[in-house]
Structure formats: structure tokens, C-alpha cells
Image (tube, rainbow, N blue to C red; front, side, top):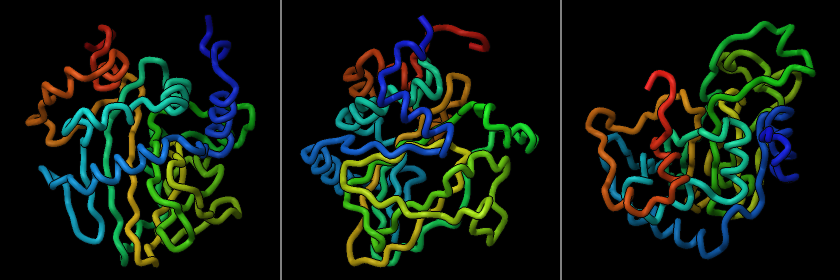
Length: 255
């Protein structure tokens, strides 16, 4: 049975938003109790390998530190969208935790990954659905207002076919707009979308959990790479789907 015929209505609508706008906002992806659990867990993290702390604290591969993080790899509603966008055999290529403190300066307008450059005639054709290779889920653990470094997005910019030029602030007459949302909401976006991180003008710290998904043939890049080893207690706690997301695939080409 084709995947499209088994897709529930919310997932189908979100998938359409990824094709049309480059992103979808999922409201209430986690409960207040889960928000508290994650904030406490982020506060308990300590830097490892290439993590860094300062105005922004950035912790990589948190799934490998404690089984607590595993359910956030395949949240209901989110994993269905990831599998619809990237294939039922997609996997996780990263899970990172962030704290952005007062004074954090954000990030300029950028895209995360451009799989290939395509002709504008094709990108401008509304009947052409640009396939996705990598997507990111950003789970907000605070109410995001204009002062608490909201993510900025330019709807439709995934069809630009290129990254923004230095200093470029709009695409096709559209400027970047802030994603204002509540704690527990999740922004799911494709890697070609032009987006930015804005300044933290508040006296609060923004807590955020990111999950990056890739197609089966997109390499998993778990730092520190050759030295990376899965924690046995994490693997022991995985569900079959979570094991697949961490790389336990059925044999395929190039394996």
C-alpha cells in the first residue's frame, strides 16, 4: 500500500506545508511535564568532546548520554512527518540541546544544507515537488516572544536554489518573519529553508532541543566520529524504531 494512502490528515497537511512553505509548526508536541523534564536534563548536562558553553550552551549527541532523551527521537506526530518527508527508513543524524542566554547574538540568515543546485525553471514550477533530504525539528521549551530569540523564517525560500548572499535579508520580496509560539511547540523545517536565529533581548534563557533527520543514505555524523561509541544502556533501552533511527537498518545497497 502506498505511504500516501496511509497518511493521517495532520501529517498530510504538514507535509504539504513543507513543500509549499518549507516548514510546519506543530502545536503542543510535548506536555508540560515533558518540558520540565527536558529543562532539568539540559541544566544537568556537562560539556563533552566538541560541546561549548558561554552565551550559548550547545550539547551534541544527547541521545547517547541517558535513555531519558530517547522518546524525543520519535515523538508522536513528529516521527510520522519525518518518515513521510524522508522515507520510512529515515534516521537521526543528530540530537542537540541548547541554552541561549541573555545577550546571545543569534545567527545570520542561512540554510543548513543544499543537496544540489537545480535550474530556476524547475524550482519555479508549482507542479514540481522538491524532494527533501534532511529536516530539523526544533522543540521549544519556553514561550517564544519577540525578545526571546525567536527563529526567523522566509516562507518558500527553500525554492531559491541557493543560500542567501551575505547581507541578504529577503527572497522574492519576502522578509524573514519570527516564529512566535508556546513552550512545547515544535518547528519542523527542511534543510534548504532560509532561516536565522535572532538576538536574545530578554533577561531569560531560551531552552531548545533539536532533532535532525536524514534519508537512509544521508550519513550519520555522531561526534567525535571515529571515537564515537553507543552507550550500552542507551541501546538496551531503545524501542525497535529508535534503534532504526540510530542506525540499526536492514541491509541495503552500499552496506
